Picture 1: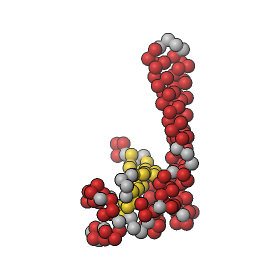
Picture 2: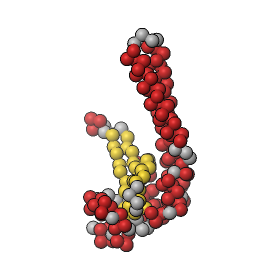
Picture 3: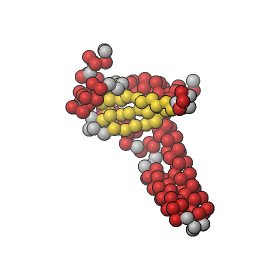
Length: 177
């Protein structure tokens, strides 16, 4: 219930928190990759050339991933957060994607993403916890009443043809369906 109140008070701050969480995961993965590469290098002890190459590839990949995550900056300066805060009219279409991992029919976890499509053709995606996906969508409708919501192949065709067709006043017939 507390999380719901936080989302309702300011969905943009909640999205910033989601981006921060995603960045923490990226840092963890990059450190894990670097450490794994270092362990491979240490245990190869210069005898196995293939293991040395694998360890170097892991270390370089981890360092690059860490650098890219670090270079992306603070979440409040992300382009989609700036657009939501200062130029929300640029967002023409929003839809969510739910991914469920179910190996052998056993539900392990669910992951949600919110996709923002802009009038200039750009696209931004933010990972959002599955439980909050619906609440965030409802709150975004309040701060972005001009945007279209939900995915359909028809909306995708409209977006490809002309993103401006998805502004709410142009898509009222589609929303009634």
